[in-house]
Length: 178
Image 1: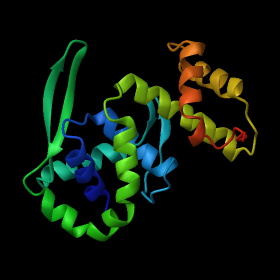
Image 2: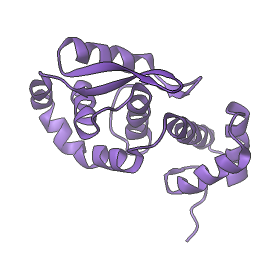
Image 3: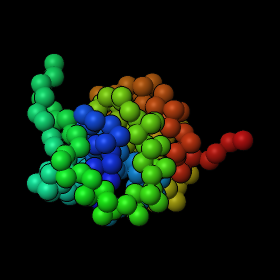
């Protein structure tokens, strides 16, 4: 099932990077409630689960996806694309993929083209929101901004607030107004 999602994301967004894959899976689980067994924890670049990289490596070893090392101005990264055995994997996961195709499309369409930095910030905001929600604490925008800024001080409070406002419909701890 999870390998099918990884392949589907690689099909829908060829050249997807590892950071984007990690965040897309996080968004699928947290925002769209797709039942995937990852336990994301806050890490250097936002929510992270090493099992995602293990599953990506396994998908590569099966030929379901391939990762190509690419050079960027700021360093190196990977571009993930569909592999020669992708169809076999998606066929095995077809029922699950059909059930959650809409959610996968929403994530790809909303976040396609976002930078790794934007995905890191948005995912951290969602993570912070879920912390408040788990503690059954109502939050105002400034609470989310302050906590996110404590975790990610390299982003300005105004930049964080802009992203919080952009993602407001996905936040659980902030009371929805009209």
